[in-house]
Length: 232
Length: 232
DNA sequence: ATAATAGTGTCTTTTAGACAATATCAC
DNA sequence: GTGATATTGTCTAAAAGACACTATTAT
Image (tube, rainbow over all chains, first blue to last red; front, side, top):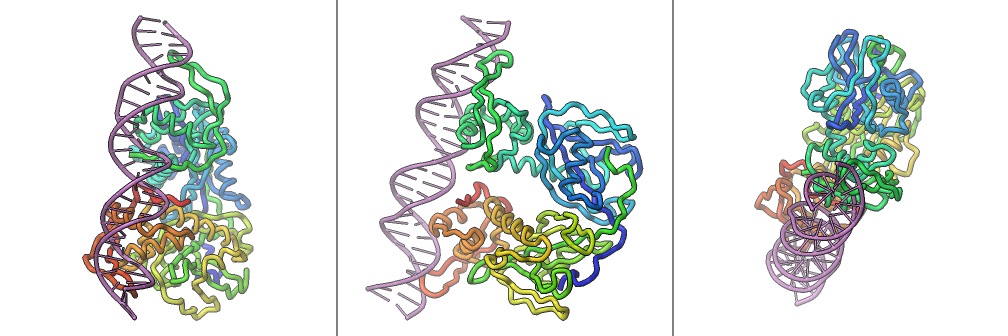
């Protein structure tokens, strides 16, 4: 069967992208939230997002929103589709199908609030998870966090949180912040340096405070982590 | 920033669901395809799908399409969102955002062609992957297959391909068909029977032809597979 | 020297993978 | 009996996890 036989439905509806953008600060994982300056959900926090243009791909809309909110170009951050949310009534104005994207970026500077009424801020993850976000964004955020946590296990995604050059301790910090656990520095070091294609040794080192200087690496071209790193 | 400040875009656009429905036959994995009876892509094969109703959730639309095409209710099959596709021009009629779903079901009978011009059939996976599907369905199918293959590694999804009661050999057949590889029956047996919550022993056995009768199991309530089963 | 962090080596436990051996059926 | 499939046991290699030890810095 399939309704493909019939004309497309033409009732009023809109398609939007919403962004779950994570960055890593000294004190842990943070997510980008805006405070809404208009109804609905006036003054409530929400994930950044916007409507998809008539001639725009979904990926392009997500990349545009990311750039508008953070100044990042896609090449500087990881950006992938998360999933779509379309319950009737999730937006009280009209039917809105939202395609959520997950973005990961190295430590970013504070966002300068735009000229409009909406202000953006990097919110610590525990605070953001406490609830009260606009629309169904509590669930979108939870789904985005779980995706990020899961992908660290079997992919090299963690390097997306790191700057161009980073140490093994930096990379370990990503896992510890996103998973909220502690990892053995020695076993972690052996694991990641032993994974082919994950790290490229720059030959240089970096010294931060006391202790032996750490070797500096760049991200290799490996995408998958095999065997994976398993969470408890 | 964020366009949330502005009114929803109201240009003509539609939201559809497309289904990647896999089932397992004696001769291997098959996917449900329809032959289109109308333009665009007249007489081309396509994934089954249809437009989302004004007051319908995305999940409900997918479940409705699955029922219309196969007679299955969701409880009898696994159904999960895959991802969304929204490139302008993917449907020549108008802007269509399609939310694709992945469905897995035990061996299903042939589909009786509906009263409309579209006929549905279970197509062997190799044949379906050969290309030439309508819209961007070649890519959707490829994404769906990769999702199914990946999820077998770290989830108990394989039991969704099995009937109510099944043997370890049945379950192994799922992995071999979906992955297209051979697995050692002895190591596989030790692995799955040693995973807590995966299999529930019914106490009965089933004898098919020669050989020792196999123990019959039902699916347990475990969702994840830890440690995972790794593909080559 | 002492404290701190980086990195290596070693040992034990767990798991994967190869495969021998046994169990129970059809014929 | 033979041949087929199911199930258990055994061995080896790889990997995880605990942790002693060495290396190199700041103070």
